[in-house]
Image (cartoon, rainbow, N blue to C red; front, side):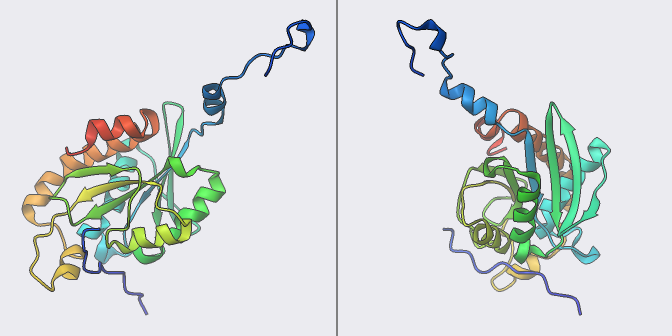
Length: 227
């Protein structure tokens, strides 16, 4: 029996030196040097979605579609792994692990936690790509933290990681649905106008992912938010 995917709930959008003994002098280590030394060059990019051919082109699966686009563009393949599908992409000295959880949307946190632990990826190097009803179609919003906003994938990640302090890449899917039709809308296919605009937005999304790992969060937000 096929497990039903989650649905959105209604959103409420909410050394000290020794002066007389030079032999004991040790080089001073500045705080920024310590930070640089401990920086990880590995990043986990999680595209949220539901598995199954019937969900491939739905609005709720934009997270999957974005990481799929980047993988195709760079000529890398996803492999079936524990709790999902994973592709490894190397760019400018960084390693990006592109993850598509196979746990269904409402259990996404389990896969995120497993791969963060397995690859020793720090929280600040996690980027979760998801759909957002509050943004008009294709609008980009990168945030360093936040609530789940009614999104069951984010809700489970918050629960499993026990924090909201991780970066989200929200892709607007608009809210053009009538009362009571929210589930059908997010699990529905893109309309023809949206399909025509998607390639350009997917190209932009792939650049955002690379920027996150190379230029950093602040620069990425300043460059891409609102585009």
